[in-house]
Image (tube, rainbow, N blue to C red; front, side, top):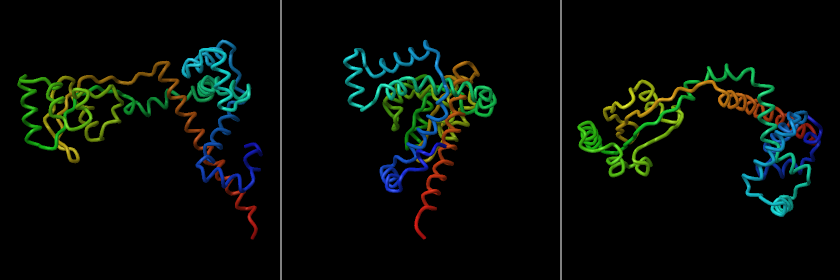
Length: 245
């Protein structure tokens, strides 16, 4: 790590800590150092700049100048921010891409996605009644969820997803993992609720280009967080050693 952060005065470090900015600053410096030698192809850089402007509605030079002035950015600071996502992606691929598939295989069960119908109520007898009504074709799952559901799924006619399987409660996730799409599950208790559930679609994760990029990005982010933690320890340790006995 460069001397810029190790040499910060104690009162500056105290101010950064008070406002919850010290870790963020160390993290950003860790990123900057890692990406310092990551040169972008001109066409990639231009696409990154265009994406930055589109995302922020900066559709004119006047809007760009106003944004830069409002943020207090020098030209080189603005260029860095505009190109940062592309640099992150390129660095992750160059340095962690070879480990992406192994990462995917270790996390595949967490990446599978599901769409399911959910109806939760606090009354077990009501849950069973609704289960029989759906099973007998007297009413649709969506209609009954809209009328009786007591959770957020009420606003979506009972439909949840597509979401990663692990986003669900572990008990529900395990039931969804072994369920047959289209088959209504018998009501079961979970915490303070009774659930009626039907798996609609199960989509296993596949290792394609987008997934490879995601896995490489995750590995890079893990490295950044670990390195940030180590650097924080060095900074706070250095500061402590400089205090008078």
